[in-house]
Length: 497
Image 1 (cartoon, rainbow, N blue to C red):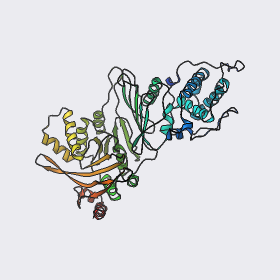
Image 2: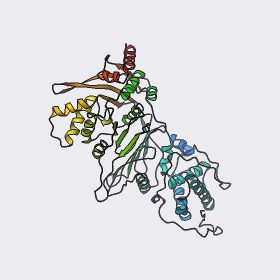
Image 3: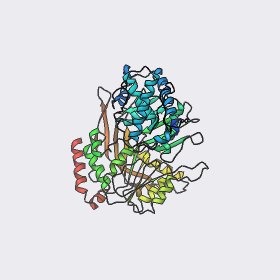
Image 4: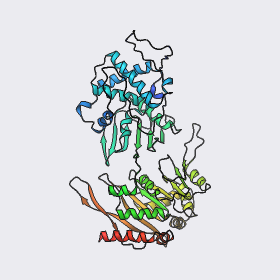
């Protein structure tokens, strides 16, 4: 189906249907599979090495290994092979193949090009070259080995030559680089185009997502001075649960039990935390305890929530088009979903005036609604909600706004990323009521830091504040969960004692 020809070997004949392609391969948007493709054994020339799936990931995991360090000669060779591949392959025919077959065809042609041009390469370099070029044509180029690793939380690309990752809460540099800034921008365009968005000089900022729900942010020149900046917040392939968060130390077993009850009895919950503290992960965990009979509607800027319930409607905002028209804001979505007969409304992230519509929904029969807000403490979360209501142009008295908040929000859960990189739930706080003009809250669970170990890891524990009957006790009784709640609080108090 594909022609292979080498300009340096006149004895090779290209098939008659062969049509040279001169456009850069990055301009072709090829769908990326939701799971990594397992490479197949290629029928390569005798000089071609046996394939090893671990080559690319191991190179990323240990970038300082001397045998796998990539110098300028490697990238020069790759550029020559890539150019020869573009002159050889028919991309329109390649697009008709399934990903595995397309990968095999590319590997065969690249092996032939290497043999024809007689490049001096080690087995490891040749295998890396095959994988890199397949990723450039079919996937996300140098990002592919990083996306395949499940231990990476964030990928941060600062221009074509600087790529950082976060592993176990710590930021590390990698040996990954792009051919040039244009290749990086083309890969960013490939990512955002899959969700109907664009990034270029006229629209240099874009939020998007990968097929697995991972969050993507792109900011391109001229706003990014040193080249396109790409940030990917990766989600694990296996969705986390509260029980797993207990094993990671993010919450105690008794605290997790309290959170399960909060999700089950339809408390209105706001998850507060700084960037990267795990708010979305915690929100995903809480939604596991929503009854499967409930109709849940989610509103997000870029869809990343991974709910397990069968009756879920997912809504996503839309940026304006080239003419500046057609924008659909978060507030539009929240208002519209009130007409869609929801049992619960979940807002991925509350950033502005839509907080007023969410509070109204919580206060008018949509118990169990949830959202996340950027703030550093439960008290600051309440202040931010007041500020965001004011952003909507409402001229309500301060006391009235606070009364709306008190009547709407039942629980604030504070998540934090500590200085050692670990993520912890530091507060489970109830909104109790008002005394005069002041909102009254009470903490059920707190995280106390005691010190740090020899490796600089913080040592702490989740403790009960001694509240034996929370404000949502009657709600727990209504759902038949009061005994379970009492047991969890009692167990936590005994542990503290």
